[in-house]
Amino acid sequence: MFKLRLIQRLQRIHGGTIAAAGMALCVGAFATSIVWVGLIYLEERRAADLLSISPLGQLEALAHAGQFAALKSRNMASFEGGNIGAVVKTSPYSYKLQMRSDNDDALPHSWRQWYYFCLDDLPTDAPVTVTVEGLGIPNYFLPFYSLDNVDWIQFPESGVKQLNPQTVQITLQFKQSKIWFARYIPYTYSRLMRYLDGVKDKPDVKISYLGRSPGGRRMPLVTITEDQGIRTKERVIIHARTHPGEVGASLVLEGLINFLLSDSESARSLRSRVIFSIIPMVNIDGVIAGNNRTNTAGINLEGQWIQAATSSLKLDAHKTPGEIKLLNKAFRDMLASGVPVTVALNLHTSAGQPSDNVFAFPHFGPVGRGYSPREAQLYDKQIKFINLLAEAYGQDRIMAPPADGGRYFLARRLPESWWWLNFQDRVMALTLESTYGLAGKSGRWVKPRDLRALGEALALAIGSYHESALALGRTRRPMIVQ
Image (cartoon, rainbow, N blue to C red):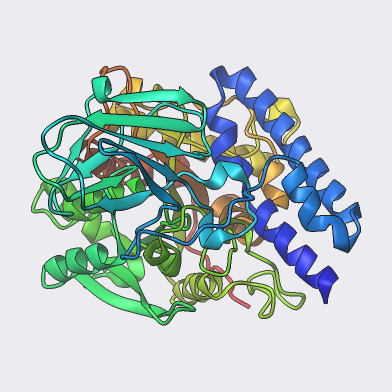
């Protein structure tokens, strides 16, 4: 039993951890490849080392390695999406707060990124200093505050100092004693449901539900298309918020949905040709709990597409988390409808350097680099799509893709791995990472309008991709569902 728990814990820690880190550190195509190779090696070595440790020493080894959270502190932000550990008032005008890990589990220190809390006894007659310690990513960022937990204001750079890689200090004089603070503007499950309630009666949109999360919340599916000519259309599947703290992806989806439901000629054309199937929030329980990376069982859902022994399309009924089983069944039901899937996008938000642009994770590479024709074809499609997105959003706001995407994803049990295993290059499956640092080279910080604009650009890129030469060669032969 202990060995089973050890393996499960390693799966939680190990699954999908290198994705954001790899591209966040890269500078140029060559550096990207080097970073990916290095991170993959270290990740595999760490897992092997942990498995070799005796069961009694496993937890101690995790703490000794210096990579995992040792602090145990109750979540002091007891509202939807809230997250912060210990809160101490160190003087009449200063506070010290401690980050906490998701569910107070022994998780990688780097996963401690999301905070969202409220202080209700702030003095208003002089500046107040709020110090947040224990941050997992050593990159400078500008957090937000709110007077009513509805409208949010970004702190000025003059008021935010990074004291060390894990500590940020905020200083500002506030107009009232009750203030909400957040890493970025929160996007909760309740906010999503309010948004969907506001668009549900528009033409060409249908809100349904895949089922319920392990915590009992309904997981929404947004379908956007014209009712006519369903059998002649193609399907695009988009899902987001597998990692609950990556709120930028929700704003990207708002922009995409708003555009698709608009009266513009481009939007009407897309609705006439494509079925958009959008799962806007996969890790609902994690979002509600205020987690950054995992669900409430402490599992990183991104790397949990665990293949069943009897079918490559189905997932292991016992090892796969409930949220991913819902997502997998929805994908298989969509495939069984007879409408071919051409694009599958996995939306995330990076906590990289402030200067990082939006980026994507292509797979494989050209034939000249040793890849098979089918592998090279998928790479070509992904590069084509990334370039189309850059045309729509701005060339200086999309990171140039690497010349070689590698095969690392095949062993990661990612959704892209599942798509490739079953359909190879027929489905252009891709992870896209938005950012909320500086908006490209504009010299200002990313605002919600920028993320929504990225969503609109994403819709335009999807439309252009379906008109491209790479997409024209596809057939409508059935996508076999076992």
